[in-house]
Image (cartoon, rainbow, N blue to C red; front, side, top):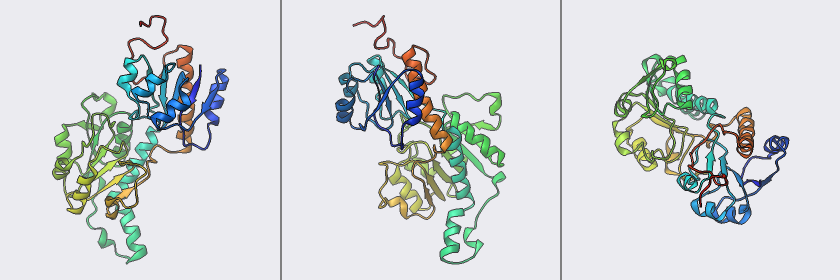
Length: 326
């Protein structure tokens, strides 16, 4: 089995190499992101461990030995999952390595917005010492946080928000609340949009492009905040710029944006009530190590014929199976 790390911006692959070598497996580290680069550098690969590489149907058909693709992280936007299923290729990810970190980042951004930490830090350092500039600030127990997406991360965030005293509501058409989710009140999307003081996004991009558009922003409270630690593309950034300019909402915090890395000339960056971090919500040293170990462990499971822990698709017949039909 030939295993390729198609691309990886980490400083090394020591954890992956060590984990795979214990199972008697070798891995090669490439620098292939585009279709052409992947085909050129990895065409004989059986397993791809990918970060940003574009694994399209064209790539899969050119890489005739390819049987398994596992992504560093949660999202699989760069992988054509439907094509993989059609071609008998298993796709996996690692959805739980940084869920606490992402929830922590969302909470941190929410508190910075609610308490106007960054705005007031700049105010004190550059202008004057005057708390009245921050008016109004509201008590957490009088605020409602709306969570769009009640998966692992959304529920982690809910627990943190509840502990801080916020009223928590959530929307998710696919998740039914369980007894342990009693801190969350499930509501319709329209109710969440109009009644939340903070809206935070914890959903995949697929099927949710521009879910926050001009229409949604116009229905939010003028005093509300918007947080995105999920995926760029969930928010119509032009509409967000207009909403901030016209004071339709009180502010926003983004860890994910379109066209990353984002140019410093981006129009959104002129807003003092916009906080931006560089797609770092997933990161802690511990989360990084867990991610690297888990992509290697999933690779080992697949090669050994064991059930992988985090399947994205369910091909009817995996490529290479004895029952594969021509």
